[in-house]
Structure formats: structure tokens, C-alpha cells
Length: 616
Image (cartoon, rainbow, N blue to C red; front, side, top):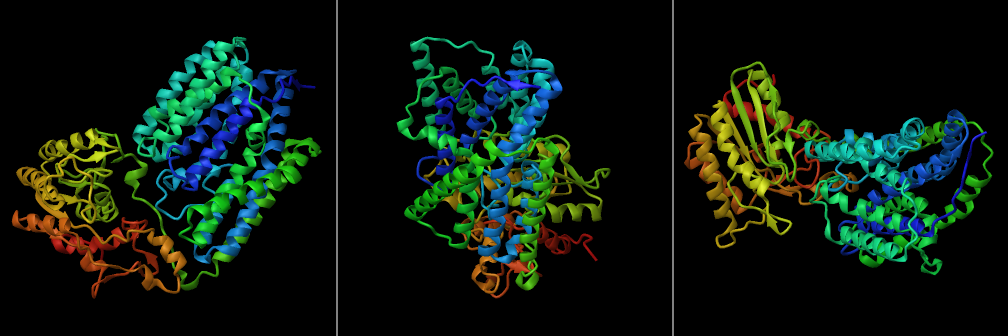
């Protein structure tokens, strides 16, 4: 029989768990200053790598028995509270949230029950760090999915390869780190959720188990001070503008490793060890409680958010004392496969509770939050990415007639309709789009410094135009809002117009016919969420026509240069109002971007303006 040698509970690790969960809650609840609180999850990954590897290396017995004992104990530790919160969340959402939102949540509950939430949210391109959409009450389960997938694979690798060998592990860590950063560079949303982009964080924790205990007060103090300082700096200085996992993630991961290596004492009177004890349950509870309550009752103030946090703490403590801890210590299940029964029951119950409620949705309005495939295949460049990805060709890829779509995310939102147009007219569509980088030569400030990647990208457009000599160049940008510019001496609309003129002249010089796709109206709020809350009063979600001085200036410049100007507002709006719903689908997917369905709807209109073939 396999046994694992216990080395006792470390209060410093429990305190680290407590700090990690508290900063995550502070970030999620919008408490001031904790802009990097999302990095608390990365601290959890380092802790998991250390604790699990320490336990695995302590096994004495056969490989099969060690593996079986480990998986059984992990299931007893993780599943009860996880499954309970999945079910309670489904019931709470069913009672509180509008029925129109329940169909999507039902799918998310199923993914969470089957340990695949991270892969589900990656597939949906749900940007955890930019929740402009109505957030999922199961979104936080993504990190549990990553951990569970780590628990599934790492014991096999460790017990077969690394149990007593640190050198191969030390070689694997930099390789895994570089791989993660490269994948983040390609597609930061997909990389955020993947277990293989987080492996290096677990492996750093695992490597700590091979280090000898250094009994030096000076060493302990230095490591502890550097570690806790690094975590504090991560939480207060790093924000969501930095790709994650990326170079900035090195700071919280290294800091967590230093705290673990220090092995310093933490007084229990601080309360941190206890919060560390309930940190798992607190993490599970805090997010759905907050999301469901604030979705039902938007506009919560600081005092109300603090009350929700206290309520989450109370619920977590209750579940830990009366459910999680008793089941973990007293549960009699001796076969791992027995857990398939509660997993299946909870998955079916949660899905059924939510799906049955969604069938009552008034008006059969279908909410689509889908993003264009440019985001998932890496062709739409995100922040800090300079070089256009190769082979971003769509439409009829065998054609010798090129057309180009260039601009920021408000150009990318037109892609679905333009791709369909390109297919019908046998054009080879090249996409040159980058987040927050308009088709205008502007020096944009982001995070208090010049966005060099954007400047280089904008200047490279002329080279790309001349290289392909396209038939059409479609230019589009977010002109209904303002970017922060380095040059604040002249009005924004004038500065944008000057920069746009340079890009437009480059398009004309390539021999193409330039086409301006004017910006659409901006809801300025989460339009799908507004629809959900006002399903019987949809007029509350309608919005006025585009009206910014920049939009007007860009149209005037395009017309003066002989460019074709296509204004989608003429299709999306009428009588001075732009509806949020058309044909029982949402017109916008978030606070500013049109949905994929809306883009496809515009294809025929754009075709008619070009004199090209459109849908029959």
C-alpha cells in the first residue's frame, strides 16, 4: 500500500494562499488600487506546483498505488466544494437572473462540471482581462480547469521521470516559459486559458521541492522581504494592458517562489492562515455571488461591494466547516471512479435547472457574443504585437485579385461580412488589423508611454499596400471615441484627420480604390447585458446616430480625396435612432463592436455600394 510522508501544514503557505485569494477578490470587486489582483491566480499555480510535487515525492510504494492514492485524495479535496458551488450557482442564477441569459450559463455550468471551463472560455474567446461582456458566473472555474488538468498529467511525468532528478526539470522550465510567451504573443486570449501556457508556473513551484532547507535567519528574511514586496508590486503596479502570461507574470511567480523558499513563520493571530484554510471555498463562492447580484442590481457602491465580500467570506467559512472539511476527512469512497456519479448528477442537474429557465425567454431573442475568427487565429494583432502575422488571407485564397482591410478593432468587426463578400467576388482578402491602432499615423499614448508597437504598425501599412497593389483598401477605425495622443496642442479631430490623410494617401498611391467604412454608433455600455435586463423594454437599449467631430472629419477627408464612403449607420439606424436588436439578435456584441451577425447583414449593403456581387 502506498503512503505519503506528511511534512505538516506550513502557515506561511496558508498565508500566501490567503493573500492570493484576497487580491483576486479585491480585483474582481473593484476595490481601488488592486489593478494587478488577477495575478493572485498565478501565485496559486506556484503554490499548487510546490504542494502537489512535495506530496508526490513523499510517496513510498509502487507507482500504481502511489498514483491511485494521489488521485483519490485530490478528488476528495477538490470535488465536493466545487460541485456544490456549481449547483448552488445554477440555482441562484435561475432564481435571480433574467431567463434570456440562462442558456449560455447552462453550457458554462456543464463545462465547469466536466473540468473543461478553461478550454470552453478559450474557444469562446472570452477575454477574462476585459470583461466588457456580461461575465459568466462560472468564469473563475477556468483556473480550476487548469489545475485539474495539471493534476492529471504531472503525477505521471514526475513519478516516471523527475522524482529524484532536478536537472531535467530545470531544463524544462525555461523551455515551457518561452513557449508560453510565444503563444501569448500569437493570441493572448487563447493563451491565457491554456494549461501548457501555465505549466512553467507550476514547474517553478515543483522545482522548489528539490531545494534543501536553508537554516539561516538572514536568508529567510531576505527571501521573505523580496517575495512579499514582489507580490505587492505585482498587485499595485501591473495592469491588464500587459499580456498574461507574459514577462510581467515573472514578477508574481518569482515572488511567490521566494516566499515559499523563505519558509518564514507567520503568526496565526494575523488571521491569514485561517483565510488560507478556506481560500479554496472562498475563491469558488466570491465570483458567482458578486456577478449574479451585480448583474441583477447594477450600480453597486463601495459599501455594497464590501457587504458582498463579507457575505462571501461567511458562506465560504460555513461550507468549509460543515461540508468541505467533514467530507474530506470522513468520506468513505475508496474507488476513484465512484466520483463519476456525483459529477454526472451535478452536471445534469445544473444544466437542466438553467436550460429549463432559458426556455421561458420572452421574444426568443438570441444573444451572440461571438468575435470574428481573426481573434482566435491570431490575425487580429493585440497590444504590444508589431509584426503582421503571415498568411492572414481569406475569401478566395487562390485569387490574384487582392483586397485589404486595415484598421483597429472597429475594422476587424467588419471582417465577417467582408470575407463573405470576398468569397462571392473571388477576391483574396488580406487583414491588417490591430487593437487600438487606427488607420491613421498617430502617436498614441498607452499606460503613460508611447505605444511604439502601434506607431510601427501604422507606418508599415504603406509598405503592405504597395506590396499587394489591391483592388480595394477598406479603412475603418473607432472614430466615435478618442485615443490619448502625444500631441495635445491641436484638437483631436484635426490630429486624427492629419494622420488619416497620410494613410489614405498611401492607399491611393498603391493604385487601389480606398473605401472608408465609417464607424458605427457606440452603445457606451454592455449592449447585450442591457438587452438581457430590459427584454420587455428594448427601447431603453437603443442609441443615437454617430455624432463625433472625428467621424465627420474623416468622412469629409475621404470624400475630398475621391474615396468611397460607406456609412453602415444608414442601414443600422432610422429616424435618428439605432436599435440594439434586429431580427431577434443583438446588433452589438459588447459596448462598441457590432456582432458577427450584424457584419454579415451589412455584406449586401457594402456589395451594392461597390457594384459587386452580394447575397441573393
